[in-house]
Image 1: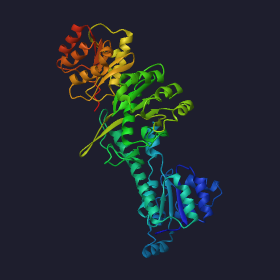
Image 2: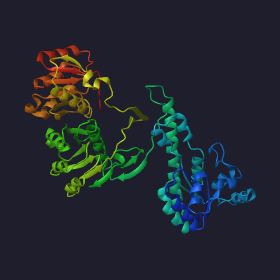
Image 3: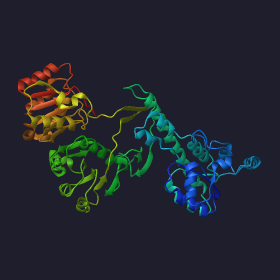
Image 4: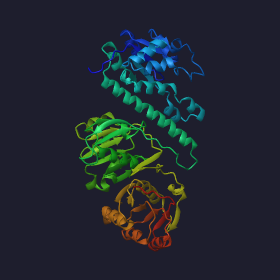
Length: 515
């Protein structure tokens, strides 16, 4: 092995003590001298392993409530000395400093502390100083030092210590991961600080985006594009468990994420079926299986080969409903054992167990020369509640119609603009999406619904009708109630058209474009 270096002396300082006892015992069994700090040294000693506390090495006590422990030349010179250079070794001899071959460090849990809702001062105390300094020093000097930041690597460390050590390629790989670790850590700190200082209602001056690669994908959106999936450390589709089926593709991820967006807007059991990031059908019902049947009935042709998300556990009834239909992915918080058994024969169906999901606070869109950041679009505006809608035309809707309007308004948020969605009995019956004018979206929604289902349905529009022509398409199809933001300079014309038709027209005052 090229550049293999034995491990004779290790510096260990970790916040996360996972696997520490086994690591220390393995190193000691290999004859490695261990130097450590504070609670890490105490844990190693409790395991019956001989350890030298860093204070004994430096001759300087831990001070300032633990803020200063390893920031000392006898520590950092031992890490940074390039033992390939005789002059470095000579200087160490003159100063009475011994080099380290291994540095094992993980950092204070800053991001976790912020996520817990801790106060400003507590978050400040969790900004690690000495840890990143040691990690960066060891990573820089990887030609002669191995740096470890992940407890998952401890078994490899003890194996290497018992043998000839790590080769240069391994040390270089560990160093790359270490620099990524400290970069992400610093980005978390900088992003938090910027967020704390940002005026209310404004985006911060700094936005950090980091991720760890989870897997290479077969290809991207098209076969000639390379792709990979990364985790940003939060819970969601990126790190979900694949319980069955083929590996996820790039398009599977984007479609499943769109399906989650659609299904998880609802409190009731809900199912969304997605193709090319647009809904084929969305429905709510008393049970997930009933919701699936209604969502599938919205557009059975388009649902073939689609992606499904459900906001409840997949039970046996839902599994039986989905089984006969060719489906690419099925995502849910969990799957019952009976459902997994029923779907086991569907070898190509990707079963995605989401668990709990952290809804992102922001949405990011890459553009040439930079990226855009905005608050995530959720149902947060006053107009999103039917209680604050304005009845602009026609009679007040009865409770059943109002419930369908509320469903349609929520479901419409997951449709690409310009969006028109027709609904009946808690399910979409026709979806017009992605058209460059609202008239064509209305025509498409009516066409997909068909004359029988369009008649007596309700409609939602993600943005205002600029003219009455788009609304007229819906009125001519027999739509009985419409909800839309309003705000057009021609609102009077739109309202008059609804009034003339005797159709209930509600204005929300809030818009939900989706591009």
